Length: 554
Image 1 (cartoon, rainbow, N blue to C red):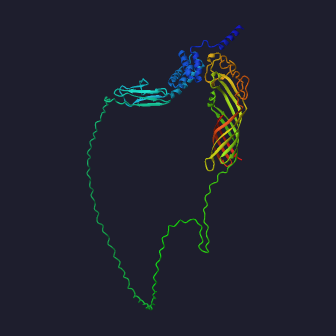
Image 2: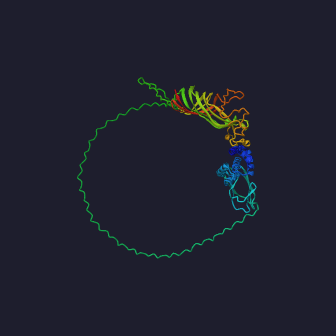
């Protein structure tokens, strides 16, 4: 039995012993990779550069290139990506190195598309042309050259017989820029000899061929014999009319009787001169007045009045409404940053039932009862100003009821009050009647158990829960019993803030909390007299509010 027992102890010694026989630069590589994952590139770059100078490993070179990208040094990062992508699996490479080679190929292609290029094209051939960019002579200016974005480039160009010119430019990501280079000749300088242009001799037109004139043959014109007209037929003799019969004598009328003498009318008396009426004043336009009777038998006619068009009556006002709908909150990660570090975006779904009554013509007083589910997945968080060793994994499955009252001002947007703009504010109180808040100490997930030097700050979103004090081994700075969170291990439930355990700070689980919305804006649609739809958004102490509901008039 000695051999199996010795083998077992030897295996445990290998697994639990610290890496005494680690390769050169492995310690710096582990620390640099953890810092890079946590976003601390200023700290990670010198560690990873030191590790690469001692021994190259793809698993440490790729995080170094990632940090170069974040610092804006895309050319350095591209060089490392291409170098790692061209490698093949070598003896001593582990799974991390193989994964780094695979990812480097993809990252190199993505990064090359982001690196801007510059092309300097001379407008004409210049003798002895020299182009410098940032003091470095460019052998082929017309070729595309890559530079880091955001860097100020100084371009200097000179040629024989021309003045030196310079300009500054800044390239942006993915930019493909071309500069047309034009140099001014020096005063009194010799211009480059122009190439003689060979003139073509004028083309002689081909000699014209004489055109032989053809004799025109004259055709004899045949004369037509004169046509003889046929002799006219003998004219018919005109029949003479017989003489008229003797006209009858006209009977003469007997002479009229002597006409009676016409009695002459006595001469009229001298006519009186007609008095001229004075000119009438400008007639006034007729007014719509009732006609006045001018005779005993004439009756006055009443004035005819045209009825004025009556405007359509506004929609009937409804004083009491019963509504229901969706109501939710959005808690951005920014709100966690007001109290500490970490956190995540949280969506709180729920719904509400409301009863509103009209105050006057334009205001509504709304009473509501709402439900909210404050569910949050595992999230790293630590108070502001605390060290990284105080990070905890926080979870929540709290559920709450909220009662509140809101005052809303309705502003109609059309005559029929089909649409209305709503502005208001509200306040109330919430009660978490169900669920708990869980807190657990955490440590860097990339650390190597048994190696205390590998437990360095990293990306808090890769932290994992501690299983107990100094569990795993070497995590005593993160998983311990030295502070207020000594018992924050799996299964710990945060007490209410109305409870203060002995020897512990006051609990943080909210039991009753205030609720305030200011401002709240929305849009109401009333397609029917007794039905309306409401869309509203606002800012509250529990996050950004959003709601969509329907109301029925009672």
